[in-house]
Picture 1 (tube, rainbow, N blue to C red):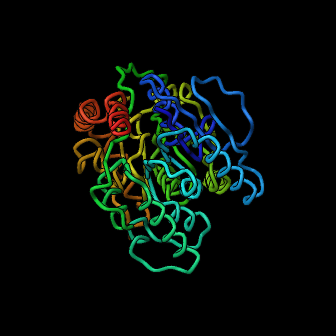
Picture 2: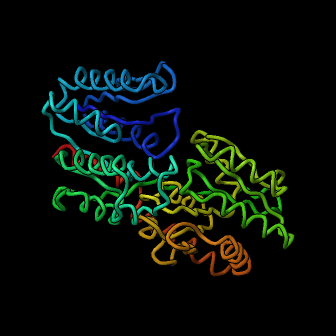
Length: 377
């Protein structure tokens, strides 16, 4: 069976799709499928993979990039029996007008909402955006993301929350399958190298991640003489703003910006960290929380998107509410961290519950095989 996979980000890029696609592509190859991946890339790279990778340079004229992307999808999709869309949905839809292949689409978020937030056009929460009316540009984007989703034969979402959202775009419920993200289950020995509390967040430094609110809470913790370090892993449009905020609050010795890290580097950071904080206003189903649980970290998170499908109303972690559906209050976040440090027994119970839960429900190998079964059917 020949399969074409389309994706916007791919290693050395970091992010959910960039982690998922290499794993599913290799597993498909192991299951007697012939895979070709078409992705955007910042540079041409000689890939050493058991499948073909076509890289389209990201930093070129948008119209030229679109033409090249669609052309390559048509060229390499002619012999495919199936197109698996994990990114570049409009380009894949246009190519499939010619190819007429079966199409499976994985949807992990709402690019129209992300675009509005990144450009500062809106300040809506994810769920507010689905209901509210916006300017013509965003309404066209909303129509486009929903319309292309309805053209897929099957849509896969990583959470039941997102399944409901995609159904609201016009996709029939019986066409939507939920397959949870997974993580490689490991028995981890923590490397506690000093007495400092090490707090961690990982991801794209985007407005809805609310990392500035975490920095504000770190400032409050420092006023109480709590010995800590805050590691921020990732890059993005808010990076310079966040670095300036750290300097402004005289926290440059306590807040470490690592930039993007590969899988092995990130695992070392997990091993040496104590508390993972996610302050986001939206997440689909965050793979980084699964990884942090796998490395026996305390989880403090907003219960948004599919996150609560992991944390189960606080059974598997500590929940911090959003104010006005936007961001957590820094003082409340500070108090939550203090509460965790003062209640180690309760925290350990939550960590044990969380580890058992991901073993039962988020085992990477089991969940990836659900994709294989769906694709082959």
